[in-house]
Length: 148
Image 1 (cartoon, one colour):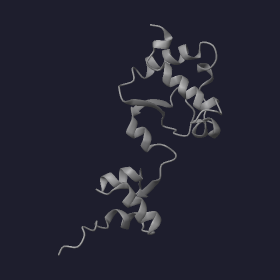
Image 2 (cartoon, rainbow, N blue to C red):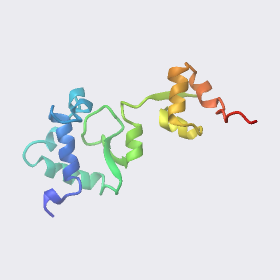
Image 3 (spheres, rainbow, N blue to C red):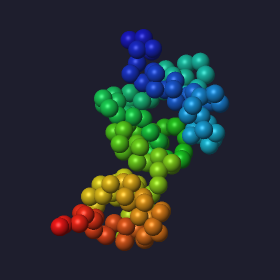
Image 4 (cartoon, rainbow, N blue to C red):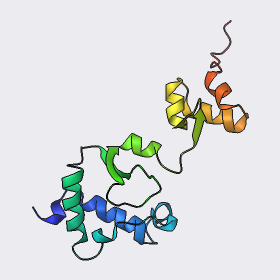
């Protein structure tokens, strides 16, 4: 198989652009924040070395999954800090998410809303607009309207 046909070829190059090209739309989330790619995976033959590592350590990327940084979500893309994860999991771990800690557990606004049967916007509004504590925001029943 040609390297350009490797399932991670386009993802890797998009990631490389996000980390090193200031004109890339995603640069502000990666390169501007100092996120780098492991030096052995850059330059001539870099993708080839990355592909071998990924195939040996991660296996093939399941359909609908993305590559993200884990366990250090603010760390670099390097061995030991990359995994394949469902898009929803990846979205919930982004640094741009708003998270709340309740009973010692931290989750994204969307995760808490889903767990408590709330619309994410309702939860956000209760906390940010109305000043509710996370406990009150999660446990206050929804109004079902006037019953006449």
